[in-house]
Amino acid sequence: NERDQALQNAIRLEAELDSERKQGLGRIESLNEAKEALTSQFKNLANEILEDKSKRFTEQNVANLDALLKPLQIKLSEFKEQVNTSYGNEARERFALKSEIERLANLNLRMSDETRSLTQALKGDSKVQGNWGELVLESILESSGLRKGEEYLVQDSHTQVDGSRLQPDVVVKLPEGRSLVVDSKVSITAYSRHAQSTDPIEAEQELNAHIQSLRQHIQGLSNKNYSALYGIGSVDFVLMFVPIEPAFLSALKTAPNLYQEALAKNIVLVCPSTLMATLRTVAHLWRQDHQNRNALEIAKQCGTLYDKFVGFVDDLEKLGQRLDQAQTSYHDAFNKLKSGKGNLIRTAEKVRELGVKPSKNLSATLIESSVDTE
Image (cartoon, rainbow, N blue to C red; front, side, top):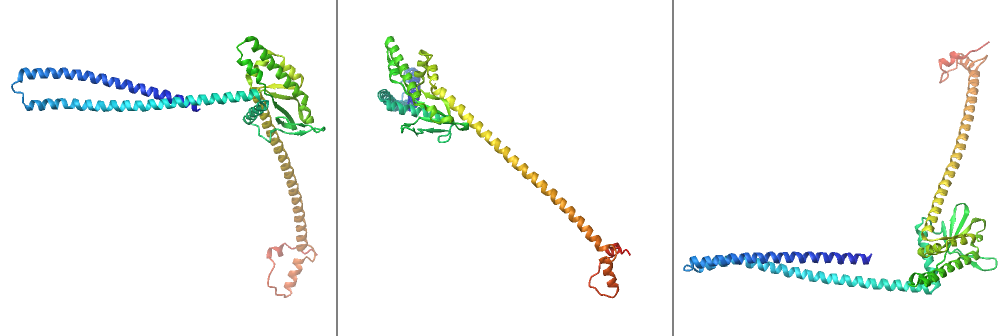
């Protein structure tokens, strides 16, 4: 998040500044050592020149000395420029680091103010507490794998016979037409005082007040009789969601029977972790239900396909029988055509032999196969 990024930038800039500072000090120390060594060498050289060649010290000697000293002057100028650049970069990085630290401090102040505002709102306004609890509940539902409007409904309102309205926070649909009601109950005021108290006696009193608040929520939820709202399609219990897990665990640790007390009223206490596990189980049941429905549909389609196949085979058998009958009728008719006394083929040939001049003739094979039995 923004705060962590700012802190990382600050750490990186501080490390880079420290590295540049160490490198600059090292270069200065090396230059000082080189300067001392050169100074010593120059002194020795000057002494030698003065002692051995003082009489012949000319402009050429001065030029030679200048040529010797000029590279040192250039190096010193370069180093000075490098040091100035380094310190300029360091100043800019210090300014950037200061800006990052100021931004981080402002972010911390803003987050503290927002946290304080949320805490005050949750402490002082039961409506705000309820809305916040419902937001936490819906966030868990969105992460559970269930689909809004399909596997769960939000604020599903019902009108009673007496005209009163019941509107559970969430109705989770189960396979086979069943329904599970989830209602969020936020109890933070007494628990907040318990957590902030430094007096053990006062802390214990506030914790007991917190437990009593949960008992009141349990009784109020039981009186609404949500489990009867959906008739035989409803399960026998209602999930009472406590969105603040530490408050939930502290209450059960101090009053271990609280869970059984709620269960006796057909209320099951759940916190974010246990509710998520429950909803994931419901999502798994829905996946299995879809798979089972698909398997049943496949079996149904296979049955229909088999019935169609049997009908097709029956039709083929009937067609074969009719073809056999047609073939028998064909042979009977053909036999009548070419065999027996006065069959048509022999009679036609006798007519041709009497002098008729037809344009077409019967095949010799057919004529030979004809039998005229007297």
